[in-house]
Structures are given as structure tokens and as C-alpha cells.
Length: 271
Image (cartoon, rainbow, N blue to C red; front, top):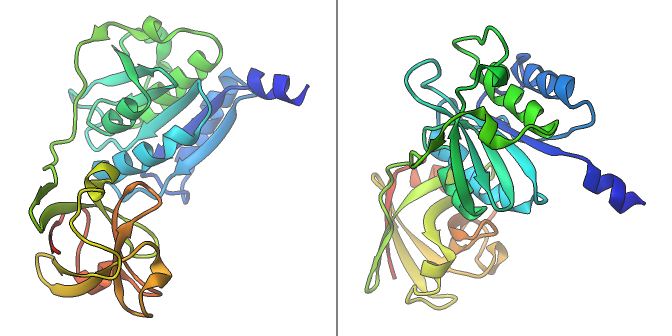
């Protein structure tokens, strides 16, 4: 019986750069609940740095695969709200994304098996009149509530042939040199790079070996490890992190402060 009840519920996730001080997130939730009162709304994060689309993209990509099939993901990091950027619905094999077509949802939708993209043009799928500066509430949350209530993604408007993607450099491994960039810095100051697990397996280093790391402003020595406590207190470890990417961490310290980096900074690692 519990399984039957759980399967009848619609899960909706929210991600934004709004923070929680103001009422913006609550207004989005209220919009959804007004249309589907028993929706299960889960916050992924509202602490994305303001206007930081790559950060929002990373959090979506690494979080949405853990939700059940059929989950509706609403993502709003939207510095271009009100301009010519499109409002879209992305239908995937295991879920649905609703938000701006600015690269925010591209990597996550590929992870969930991208099938179709629709532009939100049908005025039935917009709270009337929609605010020119708050599409998160008046379009994205409203569409989520309607789809959670049984409307179909293709009803929102015309089908699109392509999705906007982030213009990010790709990591490059050449011999014992690895060029990469910072994708994200977590709350512990751990630096998560854009080197995925497949490339990590090709790195020519063994546990315990030394690694030189160069940021735009600093150079430091690190050690290849399997987990944080495999290096001494205050030492720097390079390891495959829990999010599936190569990570740089300082045991009981802050790697971001030690290297002086932020998202999208370039890094060079020498093994």
C-alpha cells in the first residue's frame, strides 16, 4: 500500500540562485501547489551563486539522477530573464526539466536521456499576466504545476531542434600533464574539476605519488589519494570525489583558499 501511494505522487524539484531570505522560492512553491496540491516539492539548492549558470548546471547534473523516474525539475538561474532567451521544457527518458534555454539544463538533460525540447509559447501555460522579471514563478513553476496535474509537455509550444549549451573548454590529458578547469567549489572548499571518472582512470599516477598543481596565481604540491584522510592534516589530496569528478581537497582545510581559485579558473596538474 505504501508503494502505491508513493507512486501516485508527483515529485517536483527546485533549483535557483534566489536564496531563502525573500519570498521568491515560496511563491514558486505556492504556484505549483495551487495547481497540484499533493505535489512533493524538494529543494535541490537555492544557494547557487547569483547568475552563475555553470555552478547551477553542475549541481543539476550531479543531483537529478538520484530522483525517481518522472520527476519534474524546475531550474532558474536566469540572468537573461525578459530578453530573447527561450523558456523551455526538456523531456527526458527519466524526467523533465523546465527553465531557461541558457545552458543551465543541458548537461543534466543529457544525463537523464534527452528526448525532446519544447519552447513554452502557449499562453495557457503562463500565469496571466506574467511578470517580465520573474519567469520562475509565472512560467516555469506554473508549467510544472500544470504538467504535474496531467498536461503533456508537447502542449506548451513548438518543438525545438537544439538546446543551448555552455561554452566550456574540455579537459586534456597529454602524457603526465592534465589541463582542466574548476567546475565547482563546495562548502568545504573542495575544488571539483571538469575531469570525469573516465578520464580519471587514465591518469598516470598511483596512490601516494606526488602531483604538482598550478592555478593562475599559485603552485603547490599534492598527493594522489583514494580518500581525504589518506594524506596528513593540512596536506592537499587529488582524488576521485563522490560527484564523479577529479577533486582537489585539503585535509581539514580549504583547497579553494590554498590555491586561490574560483569556478572556471584553469588548472594544470603534473604527475
